[in-house]
Every structure is written in structure tokens, then in C-alpha cells.
Figure 1 (cartoon, protein in one colour):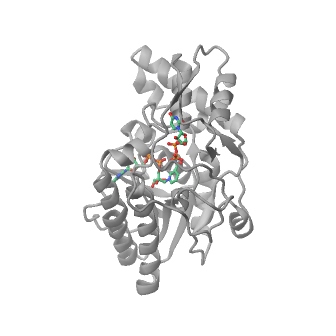
Figure 2 (cartoon, helix red, strand yellow):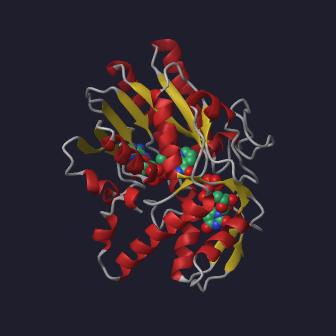
Length: 330
Ligand code: NAD
Ligand code: UDP
């Protein structure tokens, strides 16, 4: 039985990863301060004998434990969440990753670090290969996250060169699915919740900016393959190359919810919002044999089903039963 630590495991992606690791027969420790994650996301696993939850901030020294693998995800990922306390986000990226790397060093565990396509900033190269060094605004409002993640990536490589820590860095592109919070703030969860509630869909800017949306099950499969691959250091892109404008995304979601009375409204574009984003996944395909399999229409269908259940639960006051739902069953 492998002993696996998932930092940020009560969050959206972490909760799906834990589901699959437990199904594989791993013993899983989830470490999370519940800043943007939710206890409800890990509720189905709390009674599992191979699961342990430690409510803890990665910026504080991490209790010693025996480990074979560490998936380091702890960091708020939604712009409103990571900009809420930018200094804390930067600390989480630096001090948090430093603490996790020290743990990897002392335990000899293999580490996977969840970096982001944000390190490419507002990219001038399209699609983005891992060799592209990016176009970030060092002093801008996204810097606590994108420069923070760049610094954490660099720290992983320093620990490898200096102490031999076995790490791999993956760069995750926009991922969505069940277990996102209704108030997460990212575009898919906002639009789906707005469409289901009959509220206007809030397009920032003119909606011509693009993103490439990956369903969470594809990501989790890619993360596990990256963890299993001997000698991989990365960075390696994990994303779905299907590229859509934000206006197209809004139209797709309204089409998928024909009963919705919502319309779209246009609000100011936040500063430094990248104009385009699409992963070059040649490396993931050749090195890991990985490619995404869930396309946007199908992923949205599953996500909408989840949000419908959550919103229904909020209305009838039975949110607990919805939150305990097994995300893989949606
Ligand atoms: P999320 O906000 O749902 O999950 C992040 C988790 O980390 C939450 O449970 C939160 O409570 C926890 N956390 C935050 N700060 C912490 C701290 N100081 N100590 C302990 N726990 C802390 O976001 P997510 O979408 O699940 O993202 C998970 C990881 O994947 C993040 O590192 C994020 O940067 C990365 N990522 C996600 C995406 C995406 O599209 N979802 C894209 C690129 C990278
Ligand atoms: N966005 C939007 N309306 C929303 C939330 C986001 O138009 O309610 C836009 C946002 O400006 C960006 C894109 O959707 O251009 C993706 O935003 P998200 O926060 O999901 O991810 P990120 O910008 O980090 O890629």
C-alpha cells in the first residue's frame, strides 16, 4: 500500500484525485487549511480506513510522516480567491512549497507539483509549448499566483539539483467539473450557476478571449501518469487543446440548459486577463501516452448535473446530502 500525501486535497481537483487514489488502494493523507476547499468535498472519504485528514496550513512546518508520494496542490486557484489575500498566496506558493519540498527531502517521497498555464502569462506564442518562457506582468494583480507558481517551480528544480529530490512539475490548463464551489468565481462554475439560477451570465470584456477547458477526470489521469513516470521532471503541460472564446462558452452553456431564462451581460475585463490560451500537449502525448478524452459538451453536461443537484440541495436545505454525493457518480 503506497502512502500518499495530497496537499490541497479538500479542493476541487484534490478531492477527485483522492477518490481515484483510494480506489487504487493507496493510503491517503489530505492536508488542507480549508481556505478555498470544503470539508464536504472529502466527506465521502472520512470514514475510509485508508484516509486521514489533517487541517493544516502548508505555510507552517508540516508534521513528519512516512510517505512514498506527495501531490502538492495547496494554493487557491480562482482569481478572486488568490487575489483576496495576495501576500498569503505568495507565501503559500513559496513557504508552502518549501515546506513540502523539505518533507519530500526528509522522507524520500516522490513529489508532483501542480503548476499552471498562468506561468505563460498573456502568451505571445500560441499554442503554448513548455519551452515558451511566458509573458507575465511581474507587478500585476495576477503576479502573486503566476510569479508565485514560477518561483515554486524553480524551487522544485533547486531541490532536485541540490538535494536529489525526485520531483515532477505539471502545468495545468483551465480545468472544470463537479466539486467546484458555486461561489468559486471561475468562468465555468460562474456561468453554469448563473444559467441554472436564471441570472445573467457575466462575460468580462467582449468575450473574445480564449481558454482551453479540460474536464477534471482527464487531468487526474494525467497527474497519476506523471507521478508514475520514472525520471520525469517536467515541466509538462496537461490540458485539453480544444480552444473556445468565452462568448462561445456562454452560448454552449445556455444551449445545454434550454430551460434557462438567462441572458449575457458584458462587464469590464480584469487587468492582465490573458487574451488567448491553448496547450501544446505533444510532450504529454509522447512521454506519458496521455491525451484528453472528455470534450467540452460532455464535460459541461456532467458539470451541469452536479450544479443542478447542489442548487436543488440549497433550496430544500439538504445541502449535506448533495455534498456527500460521490463525484465519480455524476
Ligand atoms: P481549489 O481552490 O479548489 O483547491 C485548492 C486547495 O488548496 C483548497 O482546498 C484550499 O483550501 C487549499 N489551500 C489553499 N491554501 C492553502 C494553504 N496555505 N495550506 C493548505 N491548504 C491550502 O483549486 P483547484 O482548482 O482544485 O486547484 C488545485 C491546484 O491545481 C492549485 O495548486 C492550482 O494552482 C492548480 N491549478 C488548477 C487549475 C484549474 O483550472 N483548476 C489550473 C492550473 C493549476
Ligand atoms: N470570465 C468571465 N466571466 C466570469 C468569470 C471569468 O468572462 O464570470 C473570464 C475571465 O475574464 C477569463 C476567462 O473567463 O478571461 C477565464 O477565467 P477564469 O477565472 O475561469 O480562469 P483564468 O482567467 O485564470 O484562466
